[in-house]
Length: 90
Image (cartoon, rainbow, N blue to C red; front, side, top):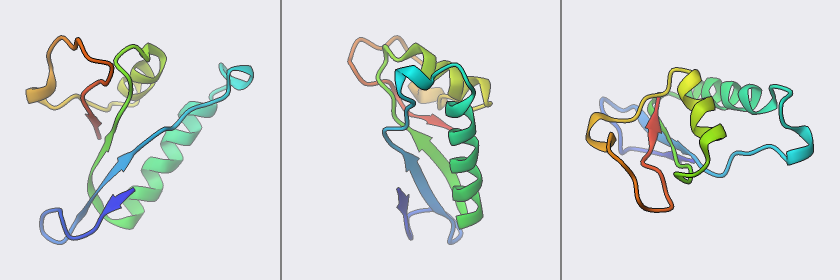
């Protein structure tokens, strides 16, 4: 999802929602390929920031994003007790 006209210097923002791989297809690099393609597509669209949302207990997805150099914003680095993790950004 992109958010037109809510960025800075005419650059848009985007969020990746609900990305996943079916259990029988995990461990083959498909999640990484999806994330990389989504990132390339959004950057080609001209976004300046990409965020994602993931449940706090979705350790494999959080690990994937962090292994691709996505970062939690400094104001979101905390212990989470809710079901939703704070956004990660590239």
